[in-house]
Image (cartoon, rainbow, N blue to C red; front, side, top):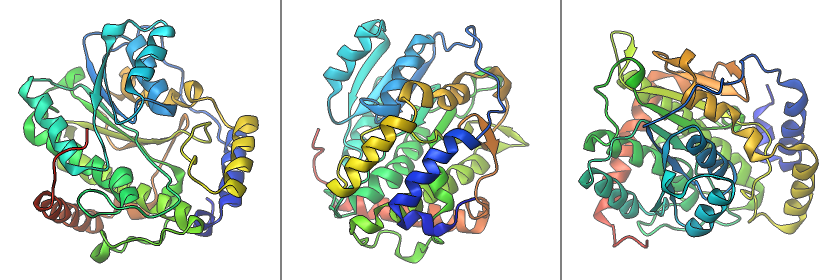
Length: 337
């Protein structure tokens, strides 16, 4: 396991991504063609590009109706999906700004008003900004998009019934968190100052990325505990690291970092349509029926970092996240989308 200092060192982080391509040995079989999601509804955040777009397309190819939730390039993503052979009615575009708590609430209220019931939720959206920016509610944008938006979205989907928690057998919904091995690089969480402004230096951005991924995995495992009864999950909760992947997530990094990273990605990192294999496996595999708290690094099961399974820390994180949402709602303005 790489040391936590990796999180503050872009060169080391890139090297880890390159090495993972060769040293992470798959342990799971490929999905069979008949492991499909016919008649099921999936929601994918950040679905207009990168891993989210590839996942949207491949879930639709496996029979799901996919709700593509994003705030940019929606129509273009729809056209690209159709050019890849996906029927246009398999994908519904859902405009949502995941940096805006009001926009997330507008989305969940709309789904509830239409009596939508989700079978799969893929929480994929993430950003790596060069500077600290504020959201409409006065919170740090990276904190909200990379962590708090997932907390807000999932808890609201559950409370509204859009994400049912009363199904059984193969009808149990699945929530899939796109996390990262970067959650192991993070410093310990400082929960008393969860919503404090962060150091926006580009040199620290990967460290913050790891911190928010640790928050995400900690929340995911606590969510699983709360949604399990008598050992059986009412909603299955999974997480994964897709490994090194060619995306635009680092598009805001300074040129001295961005251009070498793009070159390394092109040479050594996976295409999103290959990197999405663990997402599809967690969404579709029959072998996972009745399971929860499964973490994959590519196609290899692993334990998450020990800090993410600490129930006391998770309970405080949940409590603080709820309090921040209450404060954010008090400051909310009309959605920007």
